[in-house]
Length: 318
Image (cartoon, rainbow, N blue to C red):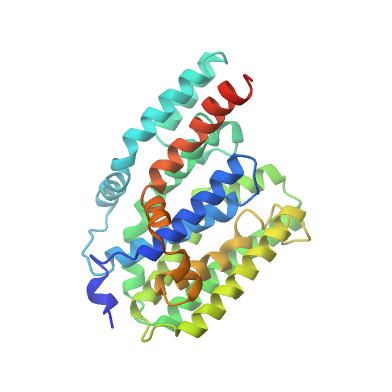
């Protein structure tokens, strides 16, 4: 059996890339006007990021200070940052007919990845709209060394699970409070979907489950894993139904952009990481693994290529 503690520094999990690919497909389809799996895909990305960061760095020594964390976060995004700058320039050129002064401000906010901090969709979705996620990722990578340092002190799977559960309950309680205070839904969307201070909690939950995955004693048996995969698919379908139909509290803006998909995202990531179930075996194929490997680049480019260029100049021009 693979010793995860020994191999987590250099052993990649191909089946996890499939989850990343599925999340990207959900987001891409939403931006193409097919389905509404964008919020689910984003939850997958954030929780998976925390999961893999712990899996990758658990046995590595990472300096933990403000200066070191800044360097760490910059190093994590530097491979994709040049593409971000290029796509922001393209978006700026494509939006030139609009208010130039406003676009210049938005341009520099995007270049310096500040857009996710303002609760205004014309800001956080400006230019290359999907780059708000890179703005968020910069913050998540900055806090990760602190999170890892804390997780390493825990030494107990049960305690780690309870911390994850506590984090999720806190998010849900905030959603309930916002619901009864009748806070504007547009602001709630920013807070629960975009705001780094809120999404750090999802990242922590993913990091905790990365710790559980590394330290658990036994793999899930194939038959049990398959049953859990089927249950997970059912949960995803039910959650999606609540989302599109906006049923009750769970389908309201106070819950559906984040907490509605947390449980199914965790289950999917954990089961695919174990790679024991039939669904995982079927979906772990080269095309999806490849798409997962390039999903970061595809994510940053797909919206401008499709919405600004293909849709505007080909479909609308017909």
